[in-house]
Every structure is written in C-alpha cells, then in structure tokens.
Image (cartoon, rainbow, N blue to C red):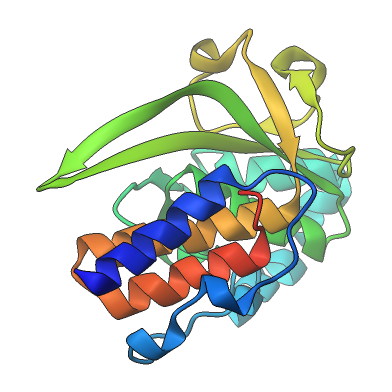
Length: 228
C-alpha cells in the first residue's frame, strides 16, 4: 500500500501542477522504494525512427512525396486505406517505431508516429488536445479517463492557445470528422505529448500489475512536463 500511495500521489501532482513550472524537487520522488524497471524507459525512444521507417521514407514513398508535396504525400502514404493500412488499437500505447511495426495504435501512438515521419522529411508539426469530455472505462477495480489528441502538419507550435478545428489546415485526426467538427482544440507542446505517452505507459503497467515499471514511467512523465 505504501508504494501505491507514492505512485498515486505523484500522478495527482502532475494533474494539479500549474504555471509557472515548479523547480524540480527530489523530494517528489521515492526511488529507493522501487526496484529498477524491467524495460527501457527513455524519452529518446518516443519519436525514434527504425531502419524500416527510414527505408519507407527514402525508398517506398519518396516519389509520392515529390509528386504530391510533403504534406499531402505523407498523409496519403500513412492513411490511405490502399497503402499502409493502419488500424486503430487501444490495447497499448506504442512509440513511433512500435506503431509502424504493428501497423496499429491508439490516437496518441498514431500522432507520435506521424510526427516522427513529418520531422524526418522536414515538416513542422503542431500538436493539439481536443476539448471534449474524457471517456471513462473500467478494467477490474481500476477506472481510466481518456482524452483525445491530434496534430497539424506544416505549422509549428504557436504557444498555449485554443483554436477551432475548422481553422487548422492539414489536421490529422483519427476520429470520424462528424465527431470533432465544431470542436475546439488547445495547442500543446511536444513535451506534453511525451509526458502523455509516459503517463499512458505508467497506467498500462499498473493495470498489468507491474508496479515498479509504473512508478518509473510516471516519474519520467513528471520530469518531461510537470504541468501535465
């Protein structure tokens, strides 16, 4: 129970943090109470391209990117049902290379993979959190709240502001257009996307009973964006 309390306290601090960003405090963490993680936990892996992804860009879709332009070419290459044939999968949150290998991911995983490709070909990326009510689900004795993110290609980060969906050109979203039409979105930074990924992995580890891993994922989420 002691370890659970530490982990949940850390997660609550993330949710409640507000600007200005607080100075890092080692008192927030209790590393000595947890064993080392059994898997690699590194922000460097989130957007890293695998060799297969690099080959996909440089060889398989290079002509399409030249013919259609980088924005339209990348969107068609990834999300045209006749090409990569990605599937939505909420089973786990994957990083960019895992999503590409599985050809599947949840909305955050697909955003991360798309952003990784966009950055590889020099396209600016902007991330947005869609302002909709959280979706709640239950697994055993645990309840989960899920939010929704998307991204816009060709436009860089413009600060923390709220925008309309209709005013964001080249926005890629994995919900049907009718579900988000008229919604507003808050622009978020890449550090928040990374923290969201780490937080998701913490929750997934916790649900699987891997308490030590959950702590280290949650710790890394706080390190990446204390305001998230």
